[in-house]
Length: 359
Image (cartoon, rainbow, N blue to C red):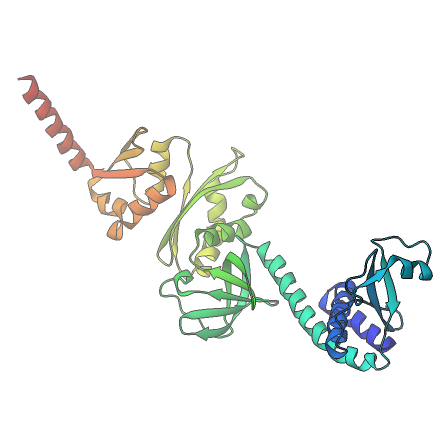
């Protein structure tokens, strides 16, 4: 090995953004293995590499003991005294044993180990980078489609969009740029595995955070998100500034902000409602676009009984119960919806039963 090898290590380290010390350490470990393999040595050895000219030196190490049991790894205290009277039992004596043709063997082994260590270091850096981005949005390009799995090129890594993380009915094409939510980053023997999602509620939340300046500066807060991917979503927001309308801020001028999010999610309908500490007001808002005549909250059972106009009952419940289901998921309350007629009939029936009991 020579100065060219040293310069090559420095250049590789710079290109791969890896500390040169990591590579030097890997080379020295490889050279120890190479020495023992090629020269049949069972001795304890240390390899030192000059980081300026690339010179390599191999040193056999022996422990100083009062009674030698293994001459290959131990030396008597008397013999050690002959080398240096300052030695004591328990110290280590080193003797250079560098073979004449060791440079050629070293170069062959060093190359393989450096490639492997660079690969490991790159995997480690990718893992650190993307593990810090869990619960965040990344943008990538669809690189491969294998069966129902979508593989997304993120630039320095590849993410996987599994079938259950894909929006139902959404189509994906090669080289298409998409935004995804990083659900999890796993360490595997083949490197980090980045699990992406297009269905996670966090994707909707992060899209609004990126699009709405008032959310970025903390003026508007997203309290809750409920989502049925590809169909409909609801988000609840409130403002820390009384002069700022949280719903209006998220909708944006002429609906531009919410439309940008809708477009990113392939046309998914989004209801933006105002959060309230009052459960009756909150549930009434969550049932938007339906109007609510009255709401009564049962805090003990966390049920909110809601009355809506007759002609809006189906709107409040939604297709296959979707609107009511999303409202319940958003608020955390069970919701019992009745039309005005149903509520009146229930009240009359209850009153009739009460009168019957009194009679």
